[in-house]
Amino acid sequence: MSVSESVFGTHVPGARRERLLARVDVAAEARGLMAGLLAKPWGQVSASVYETGRVVSSAPWLSGHAHRVRFLLDSQRPDGGWGLPDGYDLVPTLSATEALLAELRRGGHPHPEGTGRGSRGDGHAPEPFPEPFPGPGARVLAEAAGRGLWTLRRRLGEWTRACLPDMPAIELIVPALASAIDSHLAPGENLQTPAGMDGAKLAAIRSRLVSGAAVPHKLAHALEVVGKAAAGAADVSPTPLSPALAGDGRAVGAIGASPAASAAWLGDRGAADPGDSVLCYLEAVAGGAGGPVPCATPVTVFERGWVLSWLLRAGIRTTVPASLTASLSDALGPGGTAAGPGLPPDADTTSVAFHALALLGTPLEPAGLWAYDTGTHFCTWQGEDGASPTVNAHVLDAFGEYLRRGAGPADPRYAAAVTRISAWLRDRQEPDGSWLDRWHASPYYATACCSIALADFGGPESEAAVRAAGDWVVTTQRPDGSWGRWAGTAEETAYALQTLLLAAGPVSGHAAGHDDARAAALERGHRSLLASITDRGEPVDAPPLWHDKDLYLPAAIVRAAVLGALHLSDRAASTEFSACPSSPDPSVPGLSSVLSGLPLSLSTAGSGPGTSRL
Image (cartoon, rainbow, N blue to C red; front, side):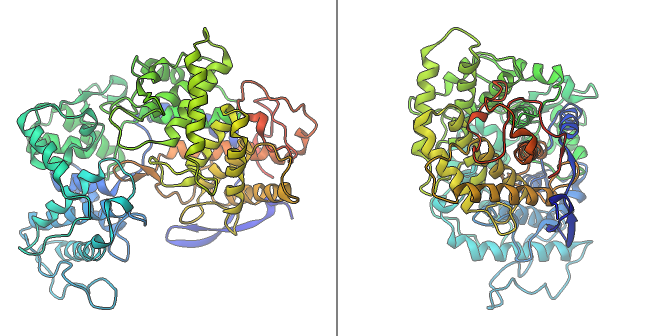
């Protein structure tokens, strides 16, 4: 039986059903994806429980309030929490619980009895409240808030700062939300905060803001953590959105590209001044998403850079609208570019934009990245707490591609930086061959970014690290052919396939059967990917895995990674390429290190079947 005739089961939220393998016209879907970037310039980002909870709490006057409350209720897990495991549930559970308590208080119930105090003694959440609260929906709100409190009381003692995910502003968000929840509870019922999160840093920032002193630019994205001090903060001002983003001619401005920060800065004025530019921003965000809101929007440059980079690196030949190219080059200033208006410029978005432009055949000197050079590695932004392997992998891409294309006079700093970054990345590889990163929950994303960059530009010194990454991918494949941290996902399977197909490295000297194992992993992975997506290349079940204040899903970027993996897998499986020359087209970087034991040749960027079928 051919793969296209096989049937595989896949998980669909709310149901289990059998799915035929998708038949995806990759080239057509890539064109449609790029058209979507222009049609939706704010970006395609999933709604956030954390961010929506903050808007529910601080801006009940904003249109779509009832839909936001319903989103929180519908998103609650059976155990009373919100979000994914391994500590990723702390921030959304705190936010949603506080928002529901605030909603109850607005209905005249400042201290609902029994909300999460104690447990039944059998490891389960408390029973529903025996007496309904008056008012429409009050019982449902109180029960959900009670389950959230029960979960927090049970789990907060288990968490410490060191064991929690490295999420932006988490050291400020957690004490801020714990304090806000305490304000809704009876005396003596205060929550315990995780060790290492005593709120001292939050208090210092709040004091500076109240005094009118300057605060770091990056704080604007999480301004809501300072509570009432955020309203009209003198050192914070809205960032105007371009008319192209505003759309209807109104003045639109955002605080830190964040609905929660914008609502906090607007304060009570939101219900009184319908012409305020920040209110116009909030109305546009809430209206576009039907009520719930994402952590960050707009993210125009971020989304366009990543989408184009994934598609072009995979060798998908399609016409890129000139306006997309121009939007990237126009965004790059002396200090780089930001993911969206109101966010600080960062090395990640900047390097991916430079890389995408180079792949488009319009390379620019990536001089703006030198501002992020610490001497050992490149920081995401100045003052970063920690370091990111994927940011440095993207800087390696940008510098390496610029050098490869010979776009300008040779500056010895670029070659030296390529050598230095490559060594830094190798030093941060995990013993099992993977990489971990602070901007994504999955090691498959970090491993793809780092191993592909090293395969392209890391030189012979990186061959062992690249081979180890490929071996790790093969050995961690799930029985159904997928890959994933918690469960198999289309997104993570796409990253694993791209690691094997773009960064597999030479296979000479491997143990007997190694090539067969890798070939089998590719075949099973391809089939699993086709079983987990629609005919448009969209994941059927796509959990949020990207780091912001809350986990989020950048849908267009993930779809681009999936389409790239499908295209590469099609070419790998197509015997018509086995007779092609093995030398890669320089317009498709990095393909010289594709797995040599497979019937694969990627000699031209536009070759290969147009549809993803085995």
